[in-house]
Length: 405
Image (cartoon, rainbow, N blue to C red; front, side, top):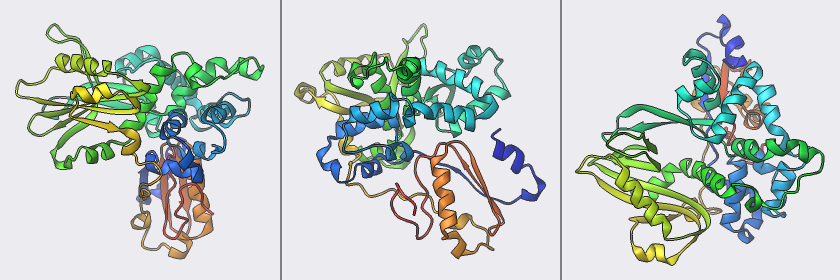
């Protein structure tokens, strides 16, 4: 249990005084473009996505970007230079924030860096029995925004017992795959970064990173498909185990709607996407174990250069360019959660608008993990659990995500 919750909230003085427990979710991708400022007009959406595939939608990381530099120059400075922010941040997070469990938690995320794992497989990796302790550790990683647990669903929308964990933080996977193994060589000046495309296995890793960005944008996908939320039973990655009757199958994103209609979403992030993608999806459709009266609507969500042959084949019901979907640079800003209703009746609104409170919000936004505040004038405790991925916007604070003044 994180320190703030363990030592502060168990104090009897705070019983009944918790104002808000907030899971801070990733910054909407449409707002990430603000960090490029006026240079966004001269930067391709594909280059923006390449950088987000390393940093994720975390404002502090995006603050470190120099829009005047190329994508590769920014990544080299932040990730492959001693003292670079992303070169050091993993150690800061796991030693300073996660505390005594950091070694075991590090072992878990390193195992997940190789592939998605079920709870039983995680228990085997860390050589512990499945139970409360492992559940608590996975809860910490989920609250911190590092991993996500994907349940598979039955055709009627009910949750199955089958689930797998995956790394949902792009920086974490990039660090484990490319920074940590080369850290000693980087410090000695023996490592030469020549661009993302030169990194071993980058094409497959970039696909997983892009998948994270897409899964954070499910509401935008639903809107683009012109679906009503009331129609949708489930929207999540889907996997099917190998049985005597059905082969194994994995779907990047499956949306199940009322009336046995299933939107099978294939996610691709490549310089060039060829007609081979159609055959890949056909094989997945054939492998899926669905009721006979089901309708499958294939959808392609992509970023990169799409061959004309893919459109000419007319296989996909919808083909969504993710850079249009996220509407980089022109989408209306996402409004963070309003804190006013959570304050106690004795709260002094002028203090809520104060510079001190805004400074606290900035600290909660920058630091990962769980931040706990006891603000005396509120007589309340406010808990911020999870990875800070967008800044909070109390009344009359700066409307910009990137700065509180």
